[in-house]
Length: 348
Ligand SMILES: *Cc1c(COP(=O)(O)O)cnc(C)c1O
Image 1 (cartoon, rainbow, N blue to C red):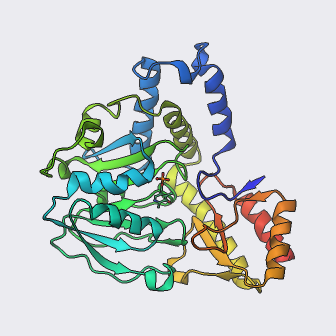
Image 2: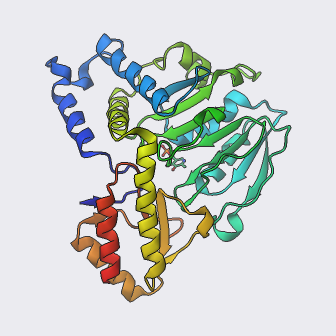
Image 3: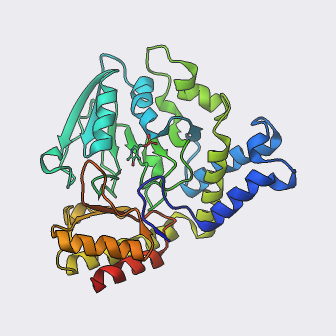
């Protein structure tokens, strides 16, 4: 199989094997990871190693904490403003895609939102120019727009605290993670299994909001509890740990970036050269993680889909809101899969 799914998506084969083993007999205890207490030293060691490894792979300084929380990326759309934005204050947001616009909608429940720029006029197929107002409480953007296939690889220059949704490109390329006040990512694209998200937070931004926060929504309480305020999604966190270990064995973020770049270059080059295949995104803003394109000719489209089926290629259909095709090239997808797909396209 070649799995180009957008999320939940492909994970390394060895992660599936180790995860399957842990369900049957976790670390030779005779027990499944699904039936041990989260406060046992056994699971505590999983949580500690996962948080430590995440810090190491991102080169985080001591001011930043790593949490594994419930609720997917979508919960962070409201948990961020709930913790950081007072009702009479303004946060700046960039509107670059479906996910970003959802984050904007949720932030408006808690305070004022200044949308500094939007690319909605062209179906979010490019990253617009923008300016960050110096008095904004924070600036929020999505580094990789999973549905539309755009990506911002560089970090905006500003003194305003930066907050990003990195759900679909975290740990896929080198970036100075310490420049961010808060990063969040649903795990099911580049980190592990669905059911958990990773939050990286710089501690000094917390505790400034004047509303009352339920414990489960309060980042500070999660930090104090070592990301174990209640029963964490133990299995999903274990899969994250296995995937982070795998990434380290590959040589870390710098090494995986080289492969990710090669995969994306090969696919875009093939699409550019092939008549009838039309990438939708402005060249300078193309994502390395999600490659979006159209096949306007229905006959060619059918040939492509039939060939994909025949060669066991899954997950190439575009998001229901965009149509067309989307091929996702997350960390765990091998270059061989992209070669197989480009061979298929070239032979049509
Ligand atoms: C997938 C995705 C989300 C939503 O994640 P859930 O875990 O389903 O809530 C949010 N933002 C981005 C950029 C995504 O790719």
